[in-house]
Image (cartoon, rainbow, N blue to C red):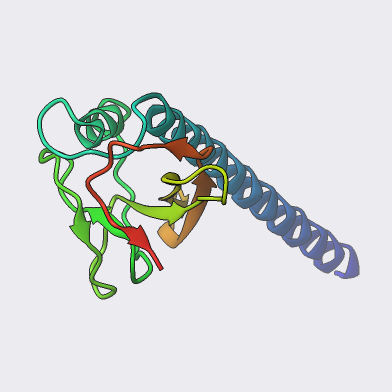
Length: 160
């Protein structure tokens, strides 16, 4: 009888470690995907020298990239950011902290004495921690900053 109880305890221990390993693997895969998407968004902002709305603007390109890659995670942005709630419309909205957005952008002043009118862009996207049986458990964010862009073509205001 003691052998049966001992082997059951070992089996439970193995199952717990397998679940921990699967959860860690799922989290690292989702983080890697989100990091790759964030890097691509920052690169597009740098290439098009800022964030501009409307047709043929960089917001439309960012939204199309996210649509093409089946990006569906949403999260809350900070006050002062601009966010996108609908990937089918190239419109950035000032953030309402009670609503959820696909991604957030903030224009940060990077001017110096010698170089005026420079700005950096901080991009935040979201990813979900989900397990096959339990579903979506948590939402995390990944954040990145562009290089300083001189005379950016952005429609958004500089954050304080």
